[in-house]
Length: 270
Image 1: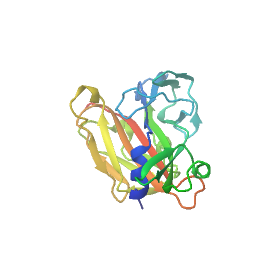
Image 2 (image 1 turned 30 degrees about the vertical axis):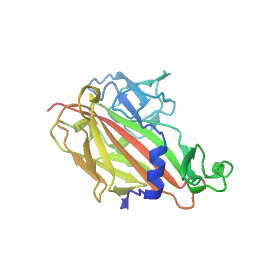
Image 3 (image 1 turned 60 degrees about the horizontal axis):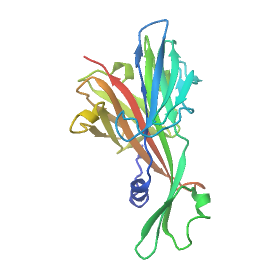
Image 4 (image 1 turned 60 degrees about the vertical axis):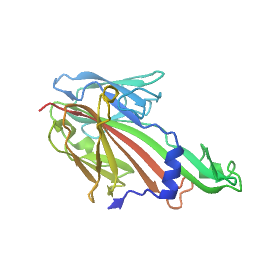
């Protein structure tokens, strides 16, 4: 069991200043019931708002983990000014995992002057030695990795693509994504290097936030098994957002690694 490591001196200073937008992806279909398959188009963007197109992000890293576990690339890619789009023809029976990520980047913060003015530079630990003034204090470097994931199931679901990789921060659906129904409990498990992450905050938000007075997010926290359980009250499309920071020991590039993971899923009508 691992508790999420949110070192106050490290993370509070870094997260407050780093302008890293989480990624999300949104497939046009989550389930396909035709044996002959169907094209699915997937939107990808970087935004803090739920299903609002904001910052452009590349879909070049996008890949689909197939029902047998192998990885495939999208069939077509397009990058616009606020979003990217990729298409894929889903025909193999089973559950596919869709992944898009941004190349990890580094941010260094430090304090200078009598007023402890905070500064930040896009640099890793090696690069900061050439940039940060010698008199700087509380120098910290964090590695950011935004990632968006979703699922598409063709005909009968399976779980091969959902299995834990045991590498870094990830979510394993205990409740199969194809079996999520309104007013029924849903359980997700969060892991870091295969170990449960305890005390992690997860915000689950339904689409349509632009047209209601409040976010109406469901906020839950992982238990000792790394699991969260929640009950979506309405059908629709949702994002489960979680950010995990792991302090790194003797790493030449960063003092900590922060992963921002957005899971997009569909809640079906009862």
